[in-house]
Image 1 (cartoon, rainbow, N blue to C red):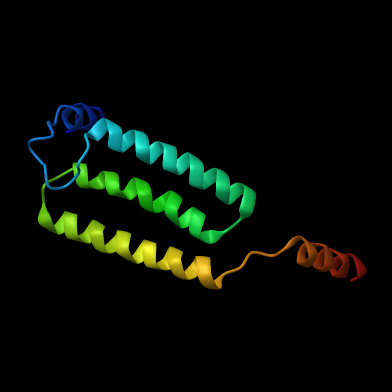
Image 2 (image 1 turned 45 degrees about the vertical axis):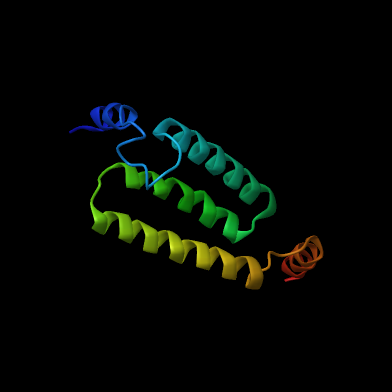
Length: 113
């Protein structure tokens, strides 16, 4: 199966085939993933907070669940998502981006040297 056939096959999956995985269809899942990647990427570009970049990566990984019904893949992606969410939680609490004052003071030190 090549990449174009995969998306065609996945788009034809009915909601009744996998009712326990997602409460919404594949097309809505893709739309939400694209919107979240755009949103978190933009917010990371503006605020430079690492958890936003982690979420921009974590959300599209959930699309991998549509590839197969393999339980190993399902649980591995779940573990990866859990690790990314916990990492994002810790980075949002403990990693603080430089403020404007720190940036200007570090720039002045660089210019003096």
